[in-house]
Image (tube, rainbow over all chains, first blue to last red; front, top):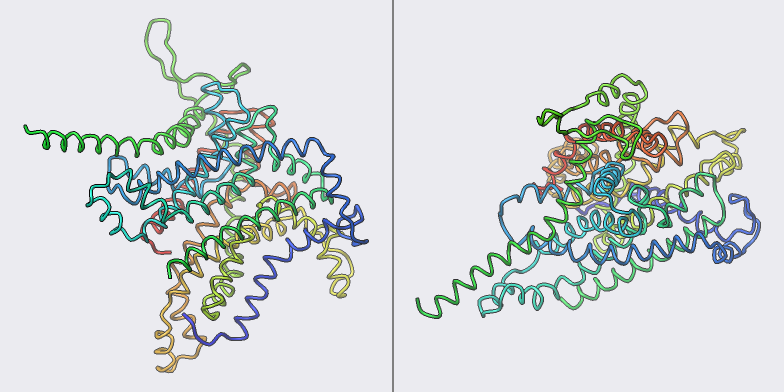
Length: 263
Length: 305
């Protein structure tokens, strides 16, 4: 569809994007505000960022979050890629419908249910909750997102090169590593980034799955947010937004390059 | 049997077991960490609360005469229907999610329409700009609205400065704040399926309508809107399902009168430590969502988006 791009269209786009971006912009701008009153501008200052480095609890939480994020998103990428291959290349197998359901359900399932059920299982099999239970929880929901990303990449994949390799005697596993994986690598990288940001972001499931000593950054931020708006939270948020924006930019540059190479 | 035959059957067998192995890895993972937890919740919802560790009774036990006894307590479910707090929380969650989804549809439709009609070379950037905030922390995006909506926040400053109002409005900690937060947070979910659908639309249909004397407005309502229904349905489901169980938005933007089941469940679990009741509440929430989830999976399977 592409015809008569009218003033109405331009106006609705401007309003729509303003709605999406103004809240984030205000948050970022006011993290550099001198005053403790977050909504009244009184001059530029980066002192709130300085204060962050003295906040031990926050730094600890950030460390836990990064560790969980790195491990969980790597595991999720491996498991999710396998799941994506199974979904697109393995045809029908016993239990396929259940497998499909288990991949798609976590994407829309309310987080409270996922969190509650994981916690009750951890209690039932009496494992100590903490860093590892949070990591397992994050891996589980992230791998479903990865599987969907990989599945959509593989379904638009030219299978003839895989078939050619196998016709020439290359075993399936070798074909996957030598042919398929290099081609879908950009999708794998962006799936990893997606799971990393999902893990970085998660509050509800982490709160259920965690135990003493493993407080993640969103949990810490959330408990402070309930007390009201402070410039420190604005500063943490700005750093997180910056990290995510950098990650997304890198992954889109990788993808663009890949597209250029294809041409 | 000659050697080659032997080798090839051997290889086939290996491939078959290799195939099973590859399927088994993600399959077992999801069975253990997604399906099994649900079964445990389901089981616990029939248990009775007790003051002990663990704080619930076992369903299956050997009676003294050696018979296996299974005791199912339906009290938790009965309690959910009797206690007005719960059924009100379910009703109001569905109501709030429905209103927020309709509002998001009204906001998203013109934007998605504009995206689809924009010159082709800008479209990938426009899509990217919709996805970007979605990558930013949900928590942070909700938090940003506290500063905007609170009594001495940006919105009130702005409206007072414009002279539209004389007294600051109280929006934060009301239903309105929850609606705004939901529309904002879930807008990309609504925008992307809508755009994907509108973008594919065949312009020649609109031209044909115009040739036959339809005004642009009539053509929009008679052609564009009906053809975009798959996108509308996908977007609405994608937003409605998680919105019903939403916890962060009602806790940060809602007030004490904002009753949502996600919040109630959280309180029941963490503050009252009533695990069986919380489990039963989760099972009922899931039952409410089964129909929309199945519907959504079917639209996904058909590739209607």
